Image (cartoon, rainbow, N blue to C red; front, side, top):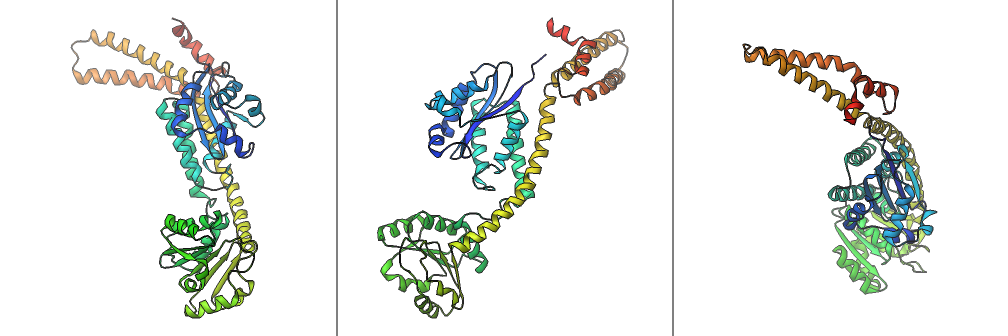
Length: 427
């Protein structure tokens, strides 16, 4: 009889290790399959896959628990990436069996992500699974567990609102703009500043189909660089007042120590715009836009505290949806685990079916060879009757075996003994 298999998940993530250590341990998807083939040389390991993103490096593996030592997997990671194993061990976690399945399902559903509900992790998971499949290191068990993880993630995304509310400053700013302007395709945004936050906000606006982008920065070369990247227009900072009336959305993300926009400047801008609505997003600390602007008609001004308030509400909603998602994951883990446990009983069921079919075929051949006068239809009727008898006799024992999860359970051992299945294996 085959030994019961075990699932392992060994790794580290943003929960347990610094970005510096994660960088040193990271695998590119192009070499992850090669490394997985090396890992498969460990005694008792039958299947494995490597997952590597900016937030985690993990090994998913299946094998014989009597031969596989999870510390050997840790040592493999250390040697393969040139990181001392002693430095690695305190940052690693090891999940087994159902805990391993649950962790993988939570990762796929972005419940373990730095930003819960982010969609990128599922695509990354698929990329590394496909690398393992191409390398031939993912077999029946890992094919099943990864595909199940993908379907769980789809259920979570479809049945909950876990990804429905933005939880970053730049994305919330864009979300608010879409609430003020029904369509962004005919609108223009002016980004003041050239740092990471300004770039991220521009990227979000471009992703939502903003009609035009302008960039102003103290260093004009940086404004030109951003304009080139996003297909926008560079604006000299000392000519800001000329371009302001063209902007429906103005984003301030500068390190300036004085206000870049005053109430008087914006009042003049509104007059030139015919008092069409204008949305101002002040991401600066200190603030880039004078707070008195908020009192002007047809101006919507949000500063960093306003956005953080929206983000807090969004996080709370995501957390509520995450609780629903966790329920889905738990149910799917139970479903997968029933299938996985039955794989240990399947060899007994297959051997029982094969033995019965073999006996049926031998007796049919012997009987039909002595009844040469029978026509084809009569012979087919006798064969169908014999097969039906076998099926009816096996139905109850096979149904009972399918409900058993342990290959060493009494019913399984009794079936193997009563039908002589172990004796045949010995022969």
